[in-house]
Image 1: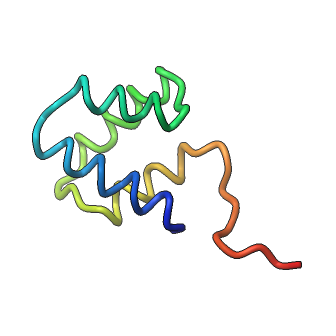
Image 2 (image 1 turned 120 degrees about the horizontal axis):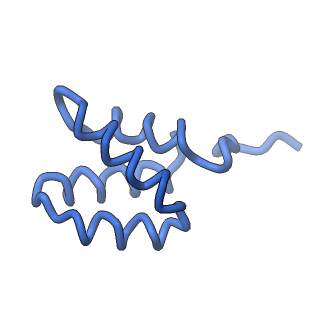
Length: 74
């Protein structure tokens, strides 16, 4: 998981803890995530038995537009 995904996951975990749906959607809009993907992401995160940065990061990566590795090999 790269640093950006770690930050996004951490922020979403925090917003889930506050149960702030509007802030979650606004944050995901800033991530340039389509609305239908936002809804799926929220549903999948809500279904987790324990919401933590690692599991949320894996869900973000699963729905991400790019799975580019943190390190590019030249």
